[in-house]
Image 1 (cartoon, rainbow, N blue to C red):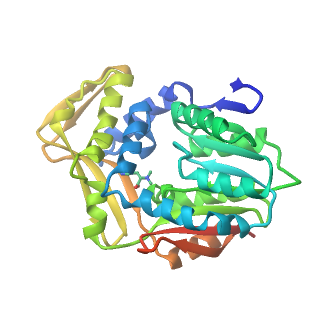
Image 2: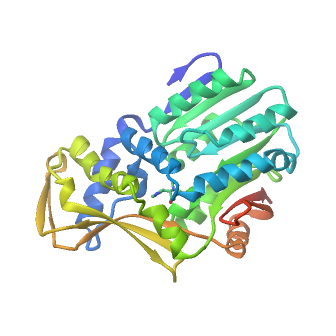
Length: 332
Ligand code: AVI
């Protein structure tokens, strides 16, 4: 734990929790349909590659989201009665959060911000930067995966009786969960909140494959590098011998399920050895490792999800082109 006057960081996923990584890689690569959970994208290099994705012209999500926040942060903040504290799940570089922090600091002189991120390095960098920018800010940060952090928050951060908690789950991170997992996650968030507290949920909207596909298969190959870095991470951390050049990034839109499906495709028959877990994995030509699903939503679906998880969808904001949505879920 790092602690000074205005910043406390709880490191609950130290060393990337290599045991969990080893366990999940073994389970995922020995399954009939191979997969690796997307949370393992985000080591230090992966987090930086994701930040680079957010600058790509094809990755409309970040710009649409920033546009909504730029135009509506004051209104969003005014939609919940303050004073607040902000809890952000998956804070990353916290670049977009600044619009909300600034809107809150117009209404109250100080703010307790509680960011959670799987990447220790992103969390520390972003926290130090925010503290330099905003003297009214105090930060209690959690380097952990969401579920570990939610448990730790329930134990370590007392409920605030004098202020509302507004939880933030931006960037359409909800889209990377499966149906049950997203509900389990939102119920866990709800348990941390009191009635009338709120969750601001960013959700990417369903749209044509012509717009969706390039966002997940960009011309510069940054998304491909982000995906392939998972294999390089296995090499680095688990002493694997993946030849990254013998795998290819693939993104496909599954219209029926409303999601982009991301895989790594083996370009030839090959056997990979992962020494730290004493595992040999054989790949057929064309066999894939599923690394991520990115679900896209409509507002009706979001309203059902809110109801199913103890919230009510009270308001939605869109960007001008109607690509992305911000949804205010009020705890019931
Ligand atoms: C973090 N998450 C919302 C991104 C998405 O759009 O699903 C992850 C990503 N994967 C490929 N590009 C971006």
